[in-house]
Image (cartoon, rainbow, N blue to C red; front, side, top):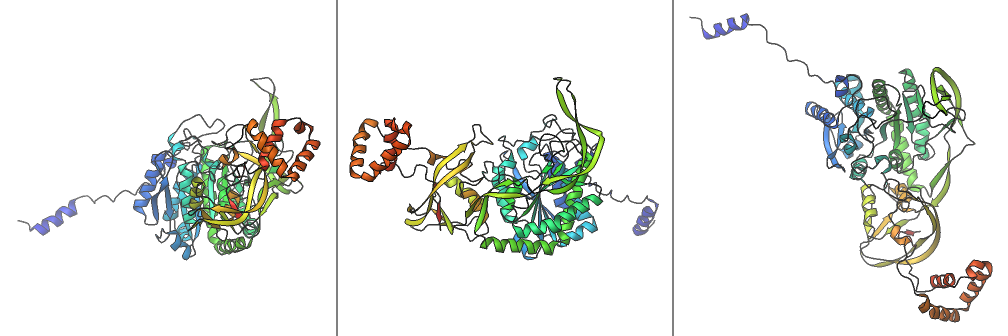
Length: 582
């Protein structure tokens, strides 16, 4: 009888070799598809969950709520497994923040980022960049839109086969919601952005518009709106590296294509002015360089994803190489921002200044429409061209304001206070009722859009009357000093004449409505008594009647004018609630 040990050895020797475990298949849903498919919301999260489980350098976390009822998620890719923003900043890591799926029908960034996160932990050359750079990725920002999947709403777009919808669960365009924050998505984003305070932010999109040779075009933070210290770095170092790098990859890069005039190329390209309602307009307020990638809708889906991947990878590598220059520029911008006294609130394009840009286009031609018989535009892909055209990208301020020492916001305006907190604003509640001297705005005139825009009737062309006066404030009202990093954000949201101020979005509309008035037959006697008591007021009334015959012929108009000069007229009507402390 064979000994047990010998028997086992013989059996092992005569058995076939045990099969090695099959390598894990890390292909993404896009790579597993036919080149014209994009990951669904569930597929996207499931893939990141696999990465999180397999690699300590990757963490998938919930980061707040969205209007869909499902959470917003964030993925952090960190070389040493440290996932805490303060700790990473202390180590000198540069933070690159990538947001995908704000418009889920434009999903290239969703698929590109899945591959990117995987490759940065699996490929040694990329992994080395994580010694200096941390990636923060929102897999899909517009969760509700991603769940509302269809095959037809992107009328102009060449694939993928199915995709999400532009509007979120409340039918809001989230790329107009960064200041007003009507969506829970935007409020979650603000808190997440302030937590990470990224150096560079990228928002991935697909374009609409003209036809041309480029697969990917780029919106960079408008150079004149960005702080000069950062603008110089971006213009002189970062953008040249990105344009040169994409050219070497044969993805020729161009600014976002917005032609001047109706003809496709006769009058040049216009720079894009991103106000704070947009993603990169918001991030600029905090000295973060922002980019929007725009792949071309008519190119096939696979090259659009590949171009987005290559741009993101190039940007991360460039940030890693230029990390010292970027850090210096941000530090200088933060320091000088605290000293800045004048801030621009409105901008216009200066058409007297233009760069020359070598543009790769297709000739725009016309032919009779099969529908109307009228001339219609088409782009002739058999007639490509490369030629220099003007690029108008200089903006000049149309309105400026001097920095106050502080603002005082009554606690009654809680919706405004909540948004300030989410954007990192430091506010000190008053400890007692008190009178504060400062400058008060009275709204003299404004225009309001006749139709709603993203749930609001926007105000514009705001005209103000400034009065220095003492104002009574209550315990719990907010004193907001301007010696803080959020100073520019505060100025562009609390100055009512700013393009995307809270006043412009209608947060203070109740002050525009008068609450008390008078009956003519009662006020007639009071008005006559007022004129007897104040001869100077009688003189002003006479002067106004002489200058305005229509006013002179209207008894009600004269009574109304006198009412507004009297103590009976409510002081809160048209008074902007926020006080400027000078």
